[in-house]
Length: 410
Image 1 (cartoon, rainbow, N blue to C red):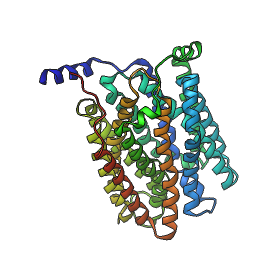
Image 2 (cartoon, helix red, strand yellow; image 1 turned 120 degrees about the horizontal axis):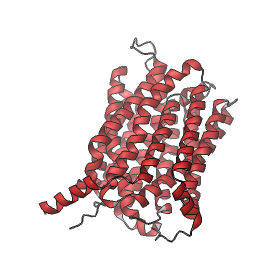
Image 3 (tube, helix red, strand yellow; image 1 turned 90 degrees about the vertical axis):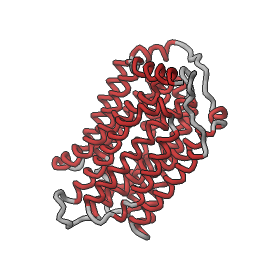
């Protein structure tokens, strides 16, 4: 048995990440820089229209809602046209929406522009996950998922700090920079994955397809859907809507070394730093030890630290809790992406399977900010963050009842 483990470890060490996936990882980094730039600014930008916390959270939820609505279409388009054309079109749609957001004359149009951005986002997210699942060698799926997640997270560390700095040039500039970053990412993929694009266009896709019915029969997939909803609620919903508002408003006049408006960027950057640290340290280990353990541990850590955010008495405590929460999320995301790839299988087209998983995350990202915004308006931030902690715990419980998805050979 020890010989088998040593052989698998050696195989993981020797197997390089395919060049096509390196291109996608590079594009992910460019996208993440831009996303990180606008993440701490968007809630404050929406609040400047004089609307409530619920209305501010609706800007984040509108993005998630249109991701959810168009997720089935993105899965079908990915199967029909191939991953790379859908990916490029998705990036360009989001780029256009960002440039329009920069000059939104009213709250209503801001909401509409963010909704359009959600369409493009689900196009490039589903196509990228499908491409990763198809091209990833089974022995290094965790390594590849970790590298892809790291590219996003490293960009998300720098992005919020850059975004806060760009505010001195005016509120429009961060959105224009993000739009430009997306155009650059689209050009990278269009040029460097030309061979894959022409292959997708030039011949019929005869790969075996992973069906949703088949995936639903796997208990690990059902657990991933539950945890995906919780992760979408917390990481893509609440953290991008209520956390920046809380950081910007709860500590006004605290005498901290940075002002409250910049604190939002620091908090999101710290969360991303915790993500990067966990991904770099642990993502490759999921190829050896499995997906289930890191997912459960990460969800529990994230639940506790997120649930306590609203009770932070000082800015430094908020920053510390964000770091811990980021580390917990960094345990979850690569392992869960690898688990989805396990369900799809190497060389198979898993568009609908991946799209359905993405839809559950988007549903959480829609419901989470709206519920949290309503709770903040009625009861305060502590209750909103506390409820999010409970939701994350439910995701952890779902995985405790599911078997490991990693198939061990030998």
